[in-house]
Amino acid sequence: MKNITTLAVIAISTALIIGAGCITDTEKNVHPYVVIWAGTQPADHEMIEIELSRQIVPYDGVVYDNVTVSVVEKEGAMHLHVSATSSACGYPDLYDFRYQNRELVRTGYLLEAIPESVRQDAIWIAMQYPGIADALSDGAGMPTVKRILPETSEKFYAPKTLLSVTWIDETVSALVDMDARMAVEMWSGE
Image 1 (cartoon, rainbow, N blue to C red):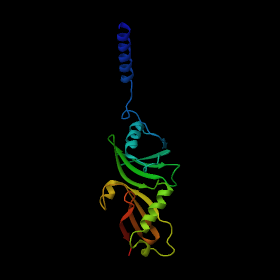
Image 2 (cartoon, helix red, strand yellow):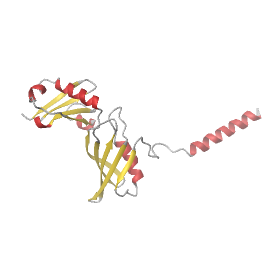
Image 3 (cartoon, helix red, strand yellow):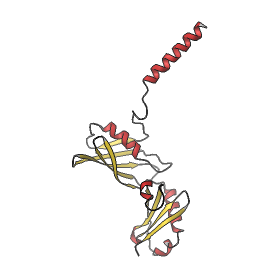
Image 4 (tube, rainbow, N blue to C red):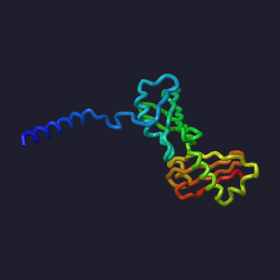
């Protein structure tokens, strides 16, 4: 009995010591990608990287390989331009942030890191929307496909991630809900 009690005390003590030394995800920057700072890293780059890991989110099923951060100081704040790339995608996701008083605020984004199969599927879905095919000329080139975040898409449809399929030369665009497999909105320059 004495051996069991001693083992229990050792096990509990070991667990407390190990637990006391643990670093949680909120305290340590844990992400699957490499962060590359173009130019000089700010003094609080680790804090910025933690905040970035919370605010840059790839398309479902995609993992960023590299995240390149460039910094410009202006108007008393750091302005960060972030380029996130994935070997599974032909285009990067681009984000812009302002960092001031230890607060990171996204100021813009252009998200094109979408797998090619998803891009092609989104184009096919957009082409099913009434009026899209009619609005395009025979020489319409390949459209761009961009991810629209929920806070933007709720202005047009619902607060969820959507894809925008746009034929720039034709000024024709469709907003595609990949879950519902349908285009939910269309814009035309006509």
